[in-house]
Length: 166
Image (tube, rainbow, N blue to C red; front, side, top):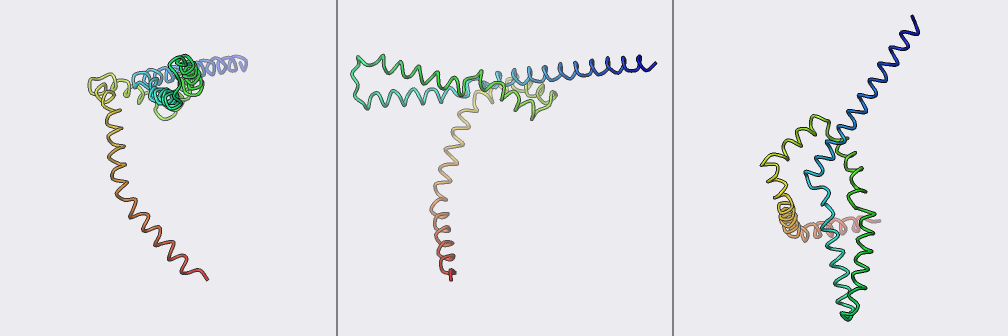
């Protein structure tokens, strides 16, 4: 009788762990689908453009002759390879999937997928880069107005602290 109980327990544990693995795999697959839908695979595209521009600018500043264009392109390719190994999608994807599966359960991931597949979700994805850039500019402009006041307060506090030194 105890062998039968042990066998049943083993079967239940095996089925349970298989189900947990299947759920985890499904959850990870949903997270990856969401990340692709949210265009996370393109997050670093601007970085590549900035690095390419840095090399182009340095090339122009060095007043290199046009005959050295191949040198510029070779170094740009090397820079792309360095970026690929650091922030390419195959490098980022596993960590991003883990981040999203840790922060959103399967039901929430399904809801995110449904939203971002909707017309409104697509509009959010289309508008988000512009909104983020404009929000950053707006915040920066407001912050610049506060910097002189904050610096004055810092100077006043420093003066007060210095005055109280023995």
